[in-house]
Length: 109
Image 1 (cartoon, rainbow, N blue to C red):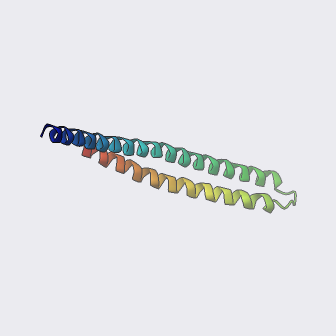
Image 2: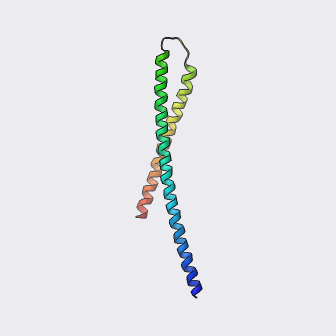
Image 3: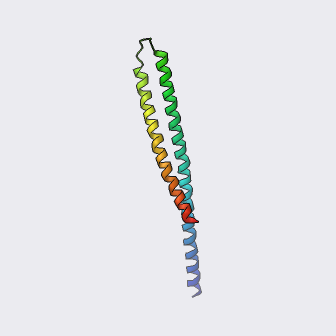
């Protein structure tokens, strides 16, 4: 009988410990993903801004010279578009992850 009681006690304690560790790890992983998504979002915004300013500067410098700058501007516009889309997607995913952390935090209280 004592053996059974000790086994049930240790099994229950291990289950509680496992559940709490899983919850803490899930929460910290969400916090890490929020930080990563912020980095991606701000990097995408920075790259887009730099590319737009570079394209504008290139167009101003090439104005009136009759040079074909399409080979430079087209890839720059594509990179601007892709980094803008990456920033938008990262922003949406960051907001969703933040809501999940907030909901989980309210559930823990």
